[in-house]
Length: 51
Image 1 (tube, rainbow, N blue to C red):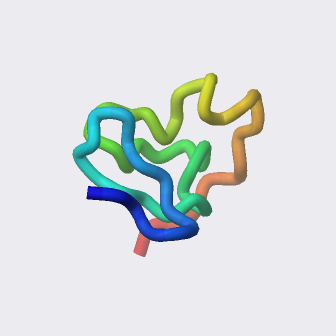
Image 2: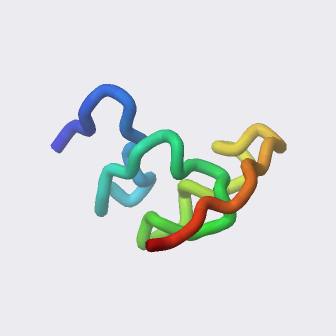
C-alpha cells in the first residue's frame, strides 16, 4: 500500500509515518527506518513531545 503525500513509507513496508516524525529521535517504524542516518541526511530534529 502506498503512503499518502506528506508521509514516509517505512522500508519494511510495515507502516506510513508523517514526514514531520522523520529523524525526531523516536522510532516510529517497526524497522526504525524513520531514524536511519541515510534517511535523515545527518539532520536530527528536536525530539517531539509524546502525548
